[in-house]
Length: 161
Image (cartoon, rainbow, N blue to C red; front, side, top):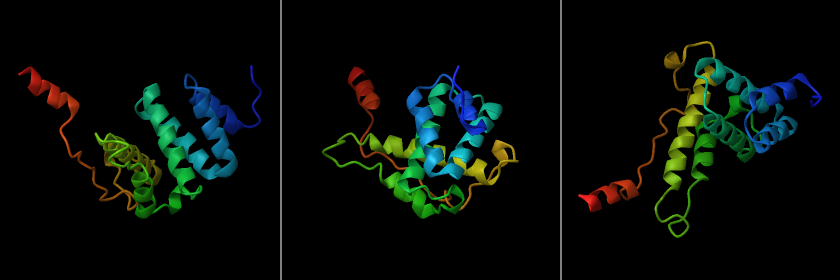
């Protein structure tokens, strides 16, 4: 049994149980550099467990996205983030045509947008039911992107027909 230095580290261990150590380490590292953001992520994970009982893979993406935007914006507090901060982070996911000719980055962009929107809706309106939460300004009017080509599955289907 490990001895934890604080209640916060104990909460991280409990909330990340079943997840790989990399994610636990990401949160613990964030505690050192962006403590308030780390505490917000911990509270959000606890809220998610109470509201929807998320799968492990859902929790993995939530942690990666929220730690990612915090690091990307030099641990700017979530409450100070603007739409520009969110868009800069999302646009950092873009890849060149040669690196990603199938534009798979667009799917990552869109899913990260969804996770950030859900987080910020909770962040600004934690006491409301999930379906009653409004989009705050920092994520309002951020559109999903469309891929330029048809998906591989779509292409495969028409080859079969």
